[in-house]
Structure formats: structure tokens, C-alpha cells
Image 1 (cartoon, rainbow, N blue to C red):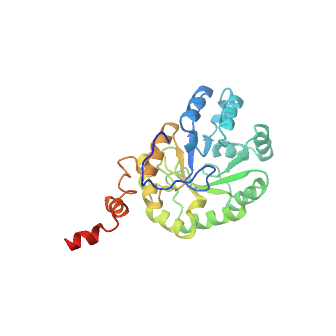
Image 2: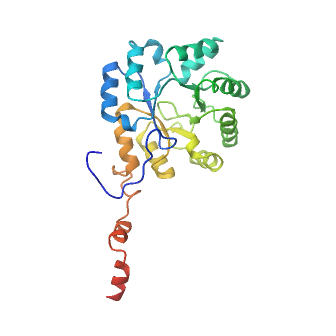
Length: 271
């Protein structure tokens, strides 16, 4: 930090198991990644090269090398995984990850039809070689999964070997755990969090209002995904109560007064 400020919420440090910020890279150049890492690498926990962008990214190996130099794990988007599965090329996909020294992989079925059992089998297989992030939730806004099924799928996929489970929202933040207008499906979140440890979940939250909601709900060290590169610093300020939206969620004048003058209440009563 450039300077010191007292009474900030405690933040986990890298490598984090909770309080993670997962970044959506939609096609940054090598130079942009260099600048990105130079400005905020301490707050970037993992990067997803969105959907199938890695296939058309020029200088992909150079770009991956910059992230690796900054000690930031990278993985290819779930849609690329689904494109390979759709073509019955799962083995080729795993070889692709090995070729680029990608240690993390997303297993999803947000667009293609993939049975829950087959998805679990793939997680079991791939988790022997890669750190798996499974994703739950449809990219179709009309496909509403009931809360009990969310919980059941999350539990099964964690048991199968998933490291974290990503709760779908897409880049838009209008599907999955959100309604088409971007509003949080709070009842769904409550039911999931009641039965699954929150640190095992990554909530995709691309919109600021959504990020604020999850930080207020679960605290500074909630895992957030699909954060835009330009929003990494702003999200960290939300986590620390250094933006108006969360300033008073993590700081109380009364608490500060009690720490500075522990006997001030007694003094006032004597007066």
C-alpha cells in the first residue's frame, strides 16, 4: 500500500482460498497485460480468457508468459471446453491445456447439453490432472434451476473433485444467480450459502451493484468472478470500505471512539 489507514477490514493474502477476484480477460494484448499486472497484480487471483477468445488471440504464448511471470493462474473459458466436448474431443482439450501449461480448467454445461452424471465423470477425470473450477447455471435466462437442484449439483461437483464452483451470471450479470434485470436471486443465494461453505463458491458479479451486494452479504473476503480488468482496483476498494457504496459497512465511528477512548461512556455518565 502507498500509505497507511487504520481500521480497515482484514483481507486475505495471495494465494487466497477466499476473498478471490477472478478476472475476465476478453482479449487484452500482451502490452495491456503487462500494464495490467504492473498496476494491480496483488489483487488478481486468477484470470479467465473468456469463452473461446484464446483460439483467436494473437501472441497467446507471450500473453500467458506475462501472467505466469506475475504468478497469476490463467484458464480457458468454459465455452471453449464445451466446444471441444460438443465435438467429442475431450482428450484433445486436455492435451491443449498441457501444451500451454495451463493448470486450471473450467468444466461447464451452460450452453451445450451435458448430463449431470457425465459432467461429474469429467470432473473426476480432469481433477486428476488439473485444478477444476466447475460452473453451474444456464446461460439461457429462461432456464431457471430451482434452489434445491443448485445445492445438489454443487455438492456433487465438489465431491467429484472441483476446487471451486462458479455460480453462473455471464458477462452481463443477467442469468443464473441474477434475474434478467440484474437483480440478485437472494433466496437462491441464501439457500446455497446455508448448505455450502461460501469459500468454495465463486459468484460471478460483473456489475458494481452486484459486487456491492455480495460484499455486504458475505464480507470483504467473498469470492467474486467475471470482474473486468478495469474494475480490479475499484472492487478492492469496495472490499476495504474505501468507496462510498461500502464505506459505512466496514467502519463505525462508535467503534473507533471505543478503541480510542474505552472509558468514554463511563465518563459521560459521570458528567
